[in-house]
Amino acid sequence: MEQYLHVIRVQDEKEKVTLTSMYLSEDAKLWCCTRVAGDESLGRPKIESWERLKKELKNQFLPRNTSWIARDKLKKLKHTGSVRAYVKEFTSLMLSISNISEEDKLHNFMSGLQ
Image (cartoon, rainbow, N blue to C red; front, side, top):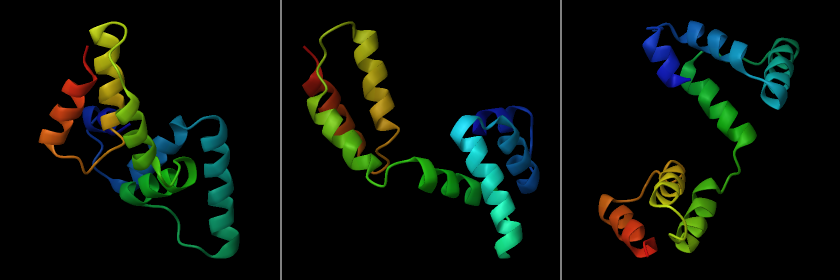
């Protein structure tokens, strides 16, 4: 979503929130509609900034220990099929681990290779 908002050059925080909410689906869409209605009825401040929306979505839909889960998977990750599949899985795990050094990334990557 951030890439899309960047490409279409959306700068306004409220507009980012509005556009993003239009693209939500299933549980996320239901959560958003319920949250907006709840904000109005409970007198909570509306979600009007992009950073707050991202934080609220992560709190609602990501497990609290996402980084730990990814680190456990990284320890078990082994190159058994194609290099492309290994790189894809490794890269995906890195998206969930924000505080890993480049040296540790390289070490983990090399350790999993055949």
